[in-house]
Length: 171
Image (cartoon, rainbow, N blue to C red; front, side, top):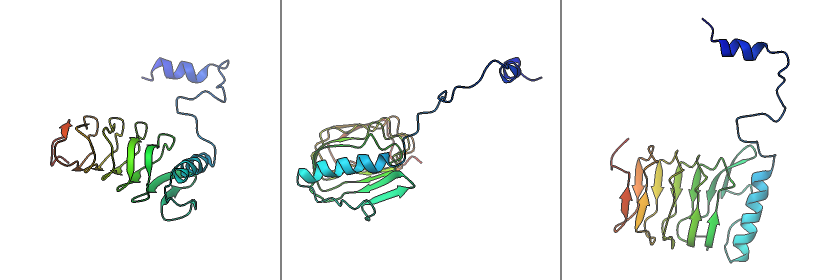
């Protein structure tokens, strides 16, 4: 038997869906990632970083209008790097810099993160549910919570780091 709620909701003539009614997140407009990346590049270059302003360089990976990868290894990055505005980011490579803070708390699509050899004292990856590969050694981390990182298969965090929620060798 067909559930009554499906039949009822499908046949009510007075119900017209609102054009904005949706259970999904609102889609960002075309070019939003490019705009956000340009702002991030300008901020880092102002602080002395040597990151490319060419959005089509090998430092950036794109899927249509969405930024999916950043390769900023050894580029004199410093201070805070906030990547939360990039919803489709899958790869971040930023080792060998002077970052004191890296914010990827909203990067749920992130699969690979290499932030080794920075000055990070904390790293929150608890909402990075797709994370498979994490390298965060040679920082100032004392604790790392990987409880929600159930897909993680490769971890390099160095000595003296208390790791929570990860069993080495799990697949």
